[in-house]
Image (cartoon, rainbow, N blue to C red):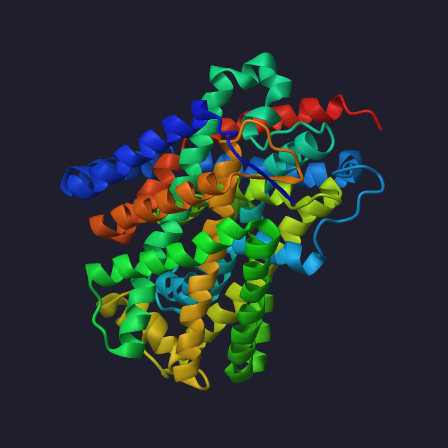
Length: 502
């Protein structure tokens, strides 16, 4: 696979780099001011206009299913005789690792415990109903309804590079049916810069959650206390891991890391399944699926507008905003690795393998955490309230077989998950900054490594600001302009397909 050297689109590269560096400088040097500003942005985006996210994701779900099951779903990404570029296993591993990151490990265990106490208005915390809905909501926020965010953009980009055979990997190019020649002028450049910033914000949320978890696990395993210095060391090790992977490229680096990642995940799931009461797990999972199917309209569009609960703003709006921030990266990367598949296979693959896989993992891990709490084996609610997410995860892992070895396994899994996610993001960021890039070429190595370093520094700035809400707010803030980009993408897809000749 060829590498494109000295082919940087500086109209996108320089503004994105400058804005990212300025943001990093403000976060590190003016942390108080940055923290207050982000707090105000968080309130406005979630409590004032949060309804926009609810409506957009509902539309995206319907639109993605329409694309997949319409006649346009049969369009092949490539020539008629083009084989699949990657096996189903490797394709699934890369898509899943790019789209999930640390959430599948940390939030899979912890989020149901959070939801036991933070419930919708009509549900009493810690009640039987709270247990049911905690398990269901944790899966809903990560399931097919969330993964539908990627569908239209994946279809647009895949069609552009493999059917129209345009040598660019950019969302602006996919908007050509609406923008026309302006796709390569300032409107298109603006879209790509917004896409770059959205990707940086989305992945930085994962890193912001991942760094404290990793340092807590290292402290538990080695006895070395957590500190800012340890955080910097962890970031440096990450840089070495995914810097090497990014340098090696898609086939030799990202693909292999993603395959390893999925094997380790299967092993951890097998450990959890071995110890969880089987009857309790299967009934719990079936009940959660029933609740989702029965209440899908309320889950997607419901709110507590006439009550005092802020559940929708605190949970649903945040998650949809976070998924939206990940949209450009997963859509661009997913389209790039889907050569030889049909649009239907790509979109349903994201929904079934990505969304369905997330349901399975969150269902299993969440059921185990809730079992530990309900049986009285471990008071996870108390640990979470008093000591935080990291210590709660450690308490859960300590109940698994071979817990010392499993603790190291979880640490490695988080490292690899974040490495594969950042690999994919850095690769995609570099691709957007490249002028011409065919489906068989890769962006310049120094371009990829530059963005890997920027992602690390941005995440370090968020960690130094402190507080999960700061990390979450950065994701929502940088992802907000993508609302308009997503709407433009849907209109472009419709025009693009209407003009397609079968």
